[in-house]
Amino acid sequence: MARIRDEQKFNQCRNSLIDVGQELFITSSFNSVGLNDILKHAGIPKGSFYHYFESKEDFALQVVEQYHNENRAALEALLLDDSLTAYQQLKAFFQANVDHFGDVGYCQGCLMANLSQEIADVNENMRSKISKFSTEMVDEVSKCLQRLENNELNLGHLRPCEAAQVLMNSWMGAIMKMKLEKSREPLDVFMKFFFSH
Image 1 (cartoon, rainbow, N blue to C red):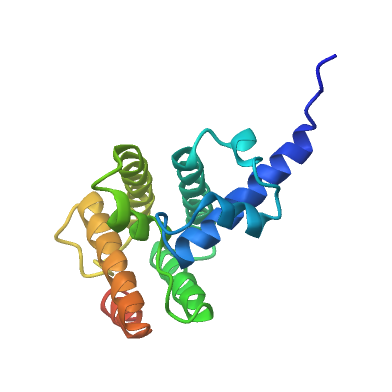
Image 2 (cartoon, rainbow, N blue to C red):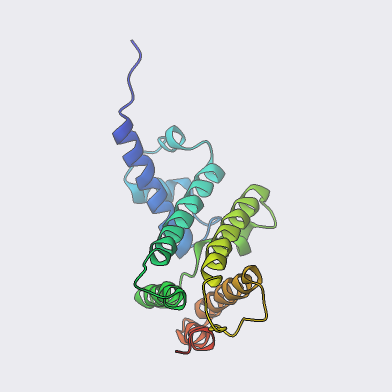
């Protein structure tokens, strides 16, 4: 008789692996993290990995998807907060991220930016997935920018979709500079430039 899989336990183990993968990839790198590292940190026996994922690439794609979903959910929650103006919603989103980076010592950076630099030129599946998620975030920001008044971000000469790209590209650059210098200053300069009031 075939053994029936315990879906709850299966999903718990799978999610635990994804959480560990996110932590390891963001504090180290995709290429330097081995399957044994992942299994050891997750407390899951060796040989179990392929019960949950087809390959390390499949695993990384699911880690990136969870990371994106968490960030998008945080942004969407703020964009649904009717007590804030569009300007305040965006400012709160970026400030929350500044605070997060402060909690981790202004290092680690953004998982998707890190992976983009590390493997986008050599792994088309990862590049394509990260690009798709990046575009989704830009689209969410663009929707918010359509509700801004009086050129509040000094980007009024651009269409909302263009302004969203400038904002997100600048943010990624600030994060990379922060990580390089282990300093809050690049994030503060970003906030001062776009959110001066």
